Length: 186
Image (cartoon, rainbow, N blue to C red; front, side, top):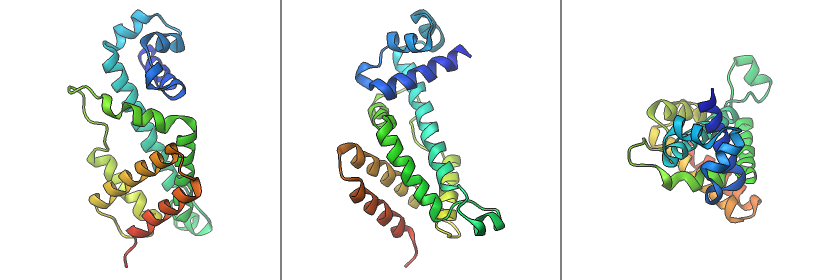
């Protein structure tokens, strides 16, 4: 339990204070434990940071998937599926919220910190398949291929970066909708 609490504390410190102020001392203080316990459970600062980054990646994925698969109306409830344009709109809110909360800045901050011994912070094939199915449902398509799913994931990250860079949200939202329209068959 303390091991997970330390990762949660590390994530909170990262989101609230950024990578430059992310220290083992700050994580230990947030977790309300001794600094030695942080090292005991997680080894090095780099290993703990990667575990925090993995937790952040998982939470980002889960928020995006939940948004895409939310039920949007009587028709969706009747046939028992989620998604639709309500899912696309909900995902936009997730992107805005992550940019405003510091979660996006935290994500972009940790992307270059992965130790060579740790796996990359990308969707594995299972998660990519879940994401692709959710996107297909949201667009009422039979399916989208993995290349399209990866491209959309990258586009979403780019749109988050635009929000962080200060691009007006209305401009980013127009581009967001354009990315979705590009997935529709001609």
